[in-house]
Length: 145
Image 1 (cartoon, rainbow, N blue to C red):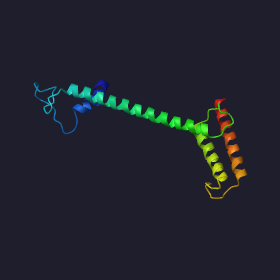
Image 2: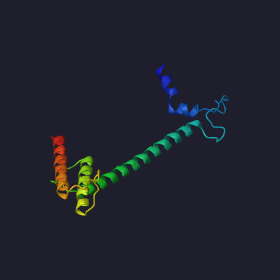
Image 3: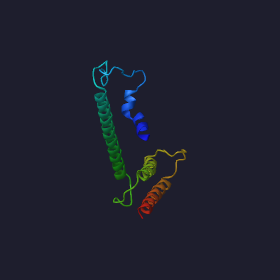
Image 4: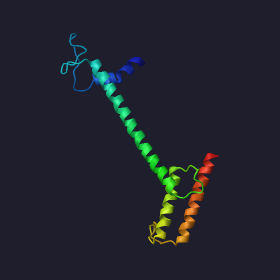
């Protein structure tokens, strides 16, 4: 019977039938935990409440983490150049533009942060930033269509 199978794998049965515990055979003691004097049903309720509370706390932490990351990306999005400030760029697009822009700014400052250490000329870096901005803007436009 599928109802019996579901009962076997329920949280209640896992708590009740944990390894290392014996099944209560005395009818007078049935429904209570000898060690703590609490009923098995109240233990099950506490377990459910505990896991629900932990899930709620974990969800709240995850929401906070996501909001923090989104706020950081919005700040970065405002700091990098774009053809349209109204255009919503993906996080990946923002990162690509930011990398290209940082490389260009480093060349203006006389530093070289290129991957291969090739010290590209400033004009090449500016062209690269422009291409990246155009490409990322077009990619987003295609997705919106």
